[in-house]
Image (cartoon, rainbow, N blue to C red; front, top):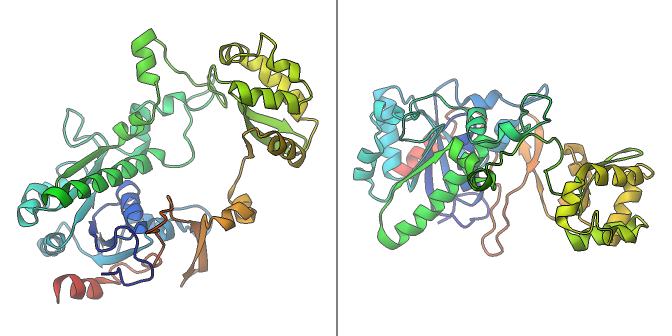
Length: 386
């Protein structure tokens, strides 16, 4: 069985009903769709998902990314008719995705326990701010709130300023990614037992999971990680350094790599200098070392510095924006960007499908549905025989 369009993908034959909204639920659906699953997105009639209107610039295009590989079916989940349609589709699905406040599905007569009675193999991915249980479960939660509670916001920015945001909705996408990972694990379990299950992905817990040793450091020594701008305390040199025409990132925070950087600077003796010879020594003199390196880098252009770093084998790179990505030959060679035809824009370029699988690569097989419910007739015919 194929999804009807182009390459199959590793999840070919897996049917997903997405009832999410905004970012977290829909991004989980995007990931599963990229890997080959057939995603049927249930949208409120007329208005559709609010993501249709999100993005920057005069012509927002975020919807083109987050709704790619999806089919749009109009369904008012607040009505009995919409709920009945949802139950019929979910009975034919392998995975259901939702990111409403806990209790919403139950209020809409779509209790996952009841849905799984009709479809025992159903996997239900539930993404929420605080999880399905616990004293905070009923609170409203957006990604930024999860980032704050999970510890992320508190360490982003400079110590003399309020916490900063990353610039993308990392809390939402992390929770969605963990929801996707949970769904894949649940599919493996189902392949052995026939049993579906609930995947409970909380925004704050997804953020907490990637917080490295912040909790363990506090447990072991009472240490709290603080906002430190562009550096990580004790990890040096690893920073963005000034050049004559911009800034360049260098990560030489390992003894052997630092020796190569010192040699490229024409100062190989730095690698054996007791002030910089070890990881701890460099970390203790982080500002001093950054200033020393900065005095060297600002004498060159980015291109000159990059050539030296490549020759020396020092991990380093330019700080890209979208325009830089369009021009980079490595992005092109890896198909990191893909271009899709678009009825409104002519075409839209966006990030490709990752990770890359050698035998069953994912793909963008169809553009985002432009109209709410445009695929209702096709989906109802294929899924329900109507």
